[in-house]
Image 1: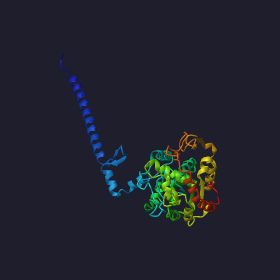
Image 2 (image 1 turned 120 degrees about the vertical axis):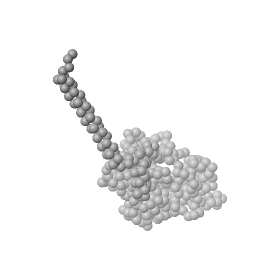
Image 3 (image 1 turned 135 degrees about the horizontal axis):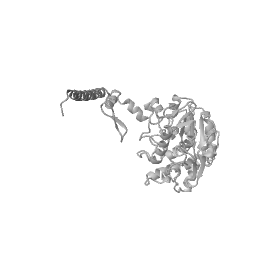
Image 4 (image 1 turned 90 degrees about the vertical axis):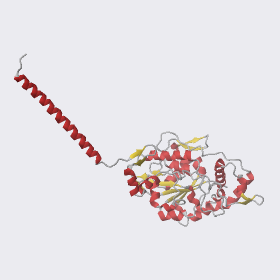
Length: 391
C-alpha cells in the first residue's frame, strides 16, 4: 500500500481533536472539583444529631450552647414534662400543715407514673396537630383540688371538649415551683387558639396556704374548680394508696387517733386534714368570690358524669358538648370511662392504679371519723350553698 499524504493528514487531524476534547473534559472536571471543595469549606459546621438522645453535638452546637448560657436548651426542656413533675399528685401533701403534721410519703418517689404518663403521651400526640398554630397562655381555669377526689377523671373528661386544652402533667407551680416565674409556667402550657381555654390541675393547691394569693396575683379572673368527696371515704382512699406503696405502714386506725381510748382524732395526719374542706375554703375566699369557684361532687362524677360535666361546661362558659353519649360504665373498675378519648378512636379508662379496693376498716373508727367531720361538713354545705349528702 502506497503512503498517501492526504490520509496521514486526515488521521492526524482526528487524533488532535480527540486529545483536545479529552483535555477540555479533564479541565472541567478539575474545575468542578475545586469549586465544590471551596464551597464546602465555607459552610458552617453541621451539628451532629445524637439519635439516641435527640440532642445536638459538634463544635457549632457547643458554641451555640456556650454563647446562650444554655438558656434556650433549658427553656425547651422545661416546656416538656420532667421526671420531677407529678401527673397525679397523690403523694404531695399540703403545705398548709404545721411542722407537727405527719406525712408518711415525704420520702416516697412519685408513684402510679406508668399509667399517668400514658395520659401525658396522649396529650403530646394530640398537641402535635396544633404545634404550628396558636400561642401559649397562662391558664384561665385551674382544678385546684382535692387529692383522691377525682381530679384526674375530671381533667380527662374535660379534654374531650374541643375548646379546652390542658397540660397533662401537674405543674405544681403555685406550691413547689413558684420561684421559677410565670414565663416558666406559661411554657408548660399547650398552645391554644382564639376562644379555647387553657387549663391545668394540681390538687395540692387547695390545701396550700400560699396558693390563693399567688393565683390571684396572676389573675383574679381565674376560674377555680374543686372536686370534693366524702372526707371519710377520701381519707381511706388516701391511706389505701399509701398502703399499696408501703405495706409496712401502721394501720389506718392507729394513724387516725392521737389516743384511741379517748377517741381524739389526729388532725396532723394529712389524710384527715385534707378533708376539713371548710377550713381550706376560708383561705380561698379571702382572694376569690364564691361565684368563681365551682365545687364538683366526686360521687356524682361517678354516678352521673355527664351531669357534672354539664355544670363544669356552663361554669367555663362553653357549649355543652360532653354528654351521656361520651361515657360508658365499666363494671370491673366501678366507674365511668370514655367511649373515645381525646385524639383517639378507642375507649379509654383511667389506669390500673385508679379504683383500688379499700381495706376493711373497723366500723367504729369510720363512725368516729364521721362524727368528727360532721360539723365541718355542715359549715362547708353552708358556705357553698350545696348539700353533698355525706352525713
